[in-house]
Image 1: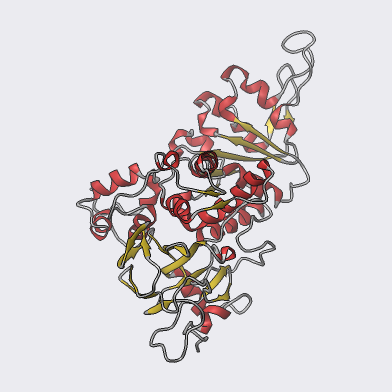
Image 2: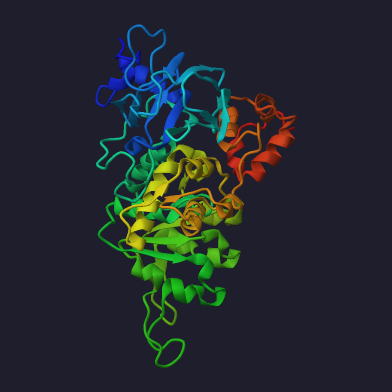
Length: 469
């Protein structure tokens, strides 16, 4: 069956509880999609997407029966459902703007309308785009080419508006973000100690707060401390506390972090920054909650759950400490969820506007395009810094891609694959060499160097070592 415009009805109606085996297959298979990143006339469409499963056209309004190809209709994709939002209606968009054909993980676009076609920010009459590229109609709409499932596996009902922050402050509608929410919900439902892994600025503390807030311990405190700031000589005092008068007369009694977290959670950020001896101090607490305040002979017990976080490799932790964290979760970086960047920008700009006492702050098409393609090292913190820089250096009411911002950007070289395209090649390959060939790189060593330069984790290529020995 088809909707007007040729879009399959199964794509629009699959939703929980009628999730089927066919829907499971669609959730596992990734297709090329166009995701709206910026729209001059319909800003509420940001985050909407459309799967490119057949030759089609992009244009204004609904397609007519006389057209040979169906017109792209966009959807709000959420776990277990695809909600249709209709066709683009921007007045500067031609009735037939683009002809599109997706084949072999690439998208061929021919511009047949009046407004210019943009490919990675450059004007062109036609282009071959791959995942990670941007395509747009100048001054009308900007879209990101990405690979994602046609359907996202069900995860209960979402109680927040599309594109908005959820109850834990997490923003995003990509499959990666919904998988993160799924994992956080699972972790909230058990009691084991958790280790949160992720690069700097990915939101590890936000995830720790989400786990605690959704758990049975939510009514007790979440005690948080950056472990890297605890001097080695004061670690036991900070963790376990001390009795009154110890070590000096007049010293007040202190509960310590472990005692304060009783019945709740103890969040230790940058856990791997502790030295080996400092890490060993945690073993008994992690095993049984048992600890001893300085100056006190009697052992105490704290009913706590420990949540650790680190941006370092696992071997930075002592094996016996690592073994005490049976649950682990990796937080995806911004480069792995590029389609969420416009939604993150919107959330940050709303906060910046509130700080400045403004009704709102808008981003230009050019700035949005650049920030969507920029290779991030410090993730959300870096995105906010670049937006603040744009605020300071833009003379007009809209944020522009100023020279100051441009100087900070790291954009993929022409023809060079970005992180999303590399991950797609790794998923679809059986070895690093095969992935390198698919990406047009000379060898697996060139692929490793590129991954390192893009700040990609070694875990991105786990399992692709068949040709390494």
